[in-house]
Amino acid sequence: MQCPRCQQDNPPQAKFCLECGNRLVLTCAQCSTELPAGAKFCLECGQPVGAGPAAPSRFMAPEAYTPKHLAEKI
Image (tube, rainbow, N blue to C red; front, side, top):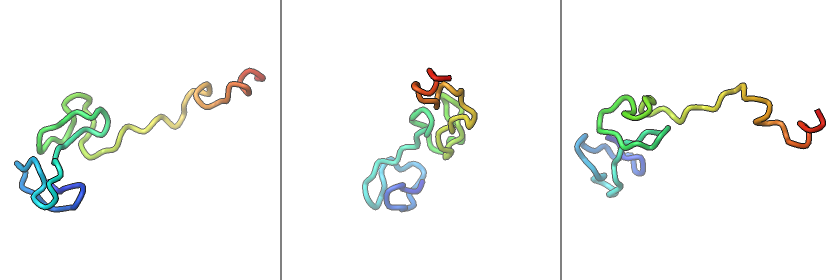
């Protein structure tokens, strides 16, 4: 596993980085669940490991982005 802080390559069983001492924990970007080494998908939400959080829909409901004062005029 590569350390996100210093980019040091560490053995898969390492819990802390051999170079900087940073804790090496694989977590889900979507729900923050701690995952076992080698996981490809989250155990809780199914999000692919290494993928960012699910992007919000491009086509949200108009109520989500229309300012209240304009919605009242419409």
